[in-house]
Image 1: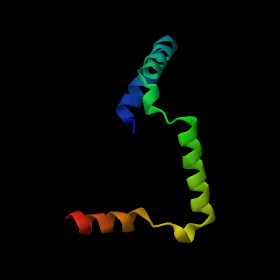
Image 2: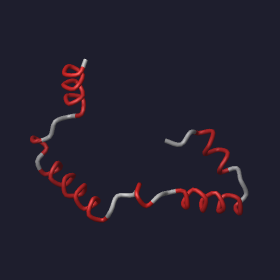
Image 3: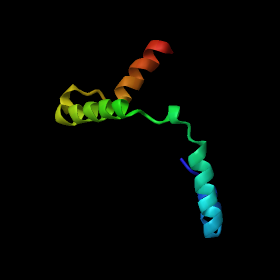
Length: 72
């Protein structure tokens, strides 16, 4: 999450500097960090299944509690 201070500083720049910043940030993103089309499709399919069958899902709080018990 972007801090309010960082966002405030960035939006306080003039337009040319903001565009330069956008380009620098964009160039810093490694293609390895972005999900492939196949990975995005899989995530979407799993999310659609979860929405269609909510009774088959386990809430994060329950999963975390189980993991905390197991590895505490």
